[in-house]
Length: 295
Image (cartoon, rainbow, N blue to C red):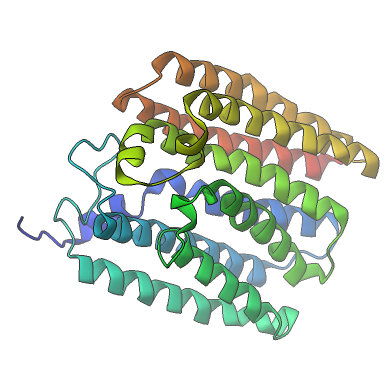
């Protein structure tokens, strides 16, 4: 297959529809910092760029290693992958991934000024997580741990440390926000895994949907959104009633998306659920942000 390494192919390779998963947690963490009176522009921008690049790196690594392990087959239902299609050479994809994560870490070093040297360990953990998600001796995504990884690295960690580098504190509300955002973002992964369940099973990629079945995948998608809203109700304990109540409106969008996923059940048409899940993540994030600002 002829190589077509060209700039335009790197854009779909970065999977733009998944990028809200990196942006929303940082915005939520920064909003909490603002609410606490400690908001700072520069560390927020650094966190934003680091999270965005780390998300892109994770996607590029996934593209590369799914090709190397044979997970991407001709019957793939999701968007085309750059390496398996021959648009980008495997070596170019790997080099770009490593180069970007090094750049992200160098960028993240700017946070040392605000939070001290210990913040380096967070950057190292995120970098390892981006690699370990798809590769290594025990790829997390292929062993039923992808969902946990998303809640941690796309929820609690970015929300928490965006706030921490500005306020140098970790209140209970931080963990509440991080967990809620993480559960909503996980549905982007669940929608993806639900669509690809048969292909993943044949390739030996044991996502939670493969391990526990189609019915589990449907209920997992529904439950994640409900759990996220229920977590937000804990804001009532901290006299932040709007932060507790506004996220409930997310269910108006979440439940119809779940019903449509169940109705479609299988095939390429499930790609629309991936897009809706991404949009719903953004809406949930802004409902939560608005609730925090009004509280």
